[in-house]
Length: 114
Image (cartoon, rainbow, N blue to C red; front, side, top):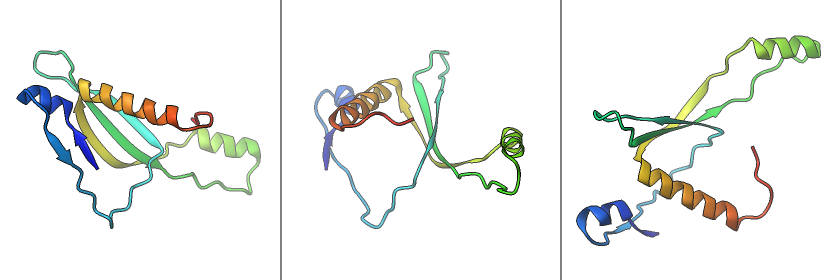
């Protein structure tokens, strides 16, 4: 896979070609949770975004309890999200990521899942 890096191209005044190095033995980590946070620089104008991707294991449920007991136990619990990746990117790169995700979603059929 090859890509043109627009931020780098702007910085250096031309196009820079890049090639992804993919480890064929690397298995993608499953994620079902995400956290998006604004970073900040010294001028107090946030231009950095921190993305944290994680996995929330399905909770173990005591099936011997009543529905009310199960609901109360779930409401009283805090379930840990196991971080799988944490990255930072500029606002411009986040906009580009949003655009690429939108393209992929538009190219696939079916309703969006939550």
